[in-house]
Length: 254
Image (cartoon, rainbow, N blue to C red; front, side):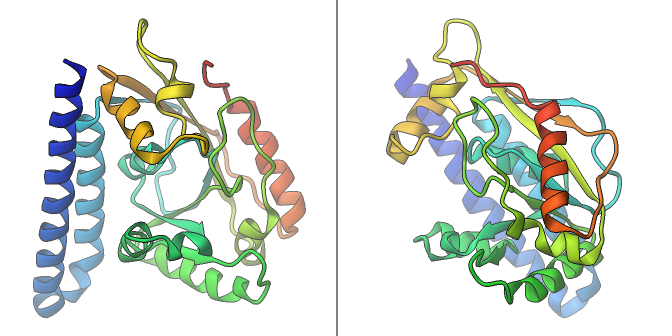
């Protein structure tokens, strides 16, 4: 029975990915010719619709605590799973900031670039100006910019250290940063979320995906902060944001 569920969900995911790519690129090509000003709104509608349908296809139920920002912002969160991207896309019209290594990954790198991901080399401090320009451009187009300051997925036991270089552009621009915390739970009688949803480096992607899709359903919770945090000192901003996210954080059941 579980194998049938996995196969069915994989089929749905494949249809949704293929359909979204065709729909988005066809619409974008037409708008490029007929109404270029509408391309950004079309991208937002396609990405948010795709994320919501993908969450439904894999059995995710999103629960919101607090209110998301009502305008384009820089937003930070903890990072637990690739499902985080779908959850945040469903909540916020957004693009993501990712470490440069992601751009070099087969398939994933090109897909991430195609949807507007902003890549940053944490070892190159000259990157700040370029990244800041990309962030400002995204915000001007009505997109929030999501940063995972842990720079990698955690096991959900606690927050990892936040990396100041990822917040350098926010500090330099003086923009206030909104924040939230993600959490996952699986139904009673199913494997815990720490095994089925949280992404462990110790397991191959195929096994992770199988465990996730075998769940009858699961809950993804996003808990929003009440007010943004600002500052021009990236280290101070990083410490304050980590403390704020930690106050919202709940460990994933092991």
